[in-house]
Length: 264
Image (cartoon, rainbow, N blue to C red; front, side, top):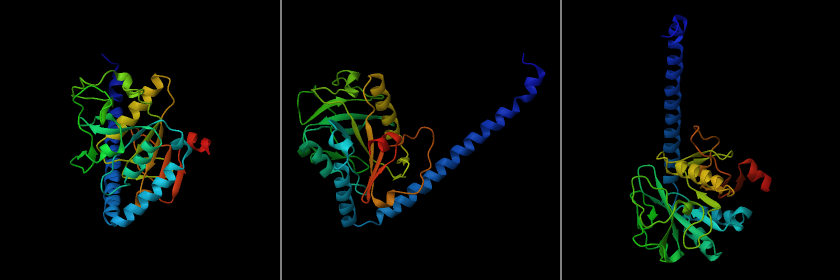
């Protein structure tokens, strides 16, 4: 049995524990408010404003040295009310880079598939969020329009994807992912990111960086793309939120991380 003095001191940790949920609740509320506010601002943008903002982001991103020297690029495919990435992804193909795109495969899990051409993107069906997604591969990688490259699966049978090493050095001769184009609801100048709250990208970014480290590969550069309303003074974050290296908006590029500033 515990000493009496120890027993009497036990309520103190309970008080500390009760403070933690309060902090979590406050963080969730702050993020919810931010998502609502930014969502309204994005909904108010015209099609022309989104197109012109996306073009400016495209030009700034292509001018980044870390983008120019990349070999393997993970790129998000856009929802209607965010930076439109189709032309930027087409630039990646034109530069001869290996391009990978996300495929949601579980509640919080996201698989990664290699896409062989910009033309194949047009045939992707849209998810319930309006995001173009590649089909699930039904044959082994062999240079098809969409071939399996990498996978992070949870409750999913990726029988056609060979080897967890695909995370870093994808099948069919694909280059390792050294650049990730990151979406989100809001960003700040310190690289803090607020996503949509489903955890797909925080989980993905944490795992791909950890797997690169385990394989002694350089950490991939994390480059966020956003429209003007999405760049805010401060983003509320928790310990699980993964910051980015660069934030690219229509007005220019922000080197958010220490290693990004060292690149300048």
